[in-house]
Length: 268
Ligand SMILES: [Zn+2]
Image (cartoon, rainbow, N blue to C red):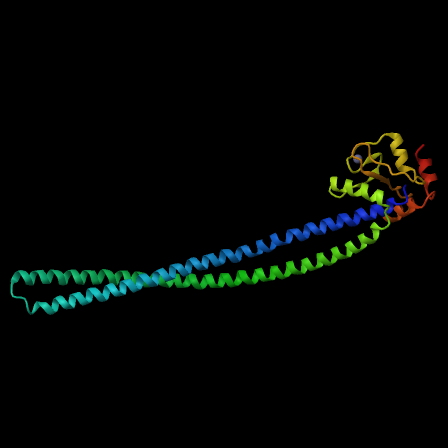
């Protein structure tokens, strides 16, 4: 394994984590918008109830005026009854009085109807105000949660970025350029582990001499997958009974000559 490969593997781990955190940050504005949706809906519903209420008040005023106006007309016609000379004129007045009374009644009925429906609009408006307050309070809580999450992600990202800046100094420039080119092509995974005899990047089986080259622990060669061109590395499986994690294996694999004998012995 090339001595810079463990650093490159670490660099990729950090870069992938930074990519993931960036994606999480990019998704936050959408969550803010989603949190605001119920508030917008509740406000629209309240506005509708307010409009209905105002319309009702306007109609009520109109019918109040109608009642007054027809009552006034009726009074005027009744006042004239004492002064009429002819039977014909009297009949005409009685007819006008009856009309004024019936129109007064109609306007009063309408007024009453609008007073009753006005109570319903009042109730809807109060319910709408409550719904807006409840939605705003929930949205505020969600905004606070999102802000806290954003802060946590940004902190984590800053930490990983600092680690990344350190790790990048450990990788020679030509290898770094190869890494960046492949990373752009493969959404960040430029380096792939060989597991069994296959590249985990593209899952293609490697030819035996390629497998041997990747497994050469003392080698300073960078081996690319024939199929996807990703830079390959190999981690020795843990010895029976040894409970060691991947990172320590990688470290062991990195020490030149450390376990190459075992690797070659195992490879026939
Ligand atoms: Zn591959």
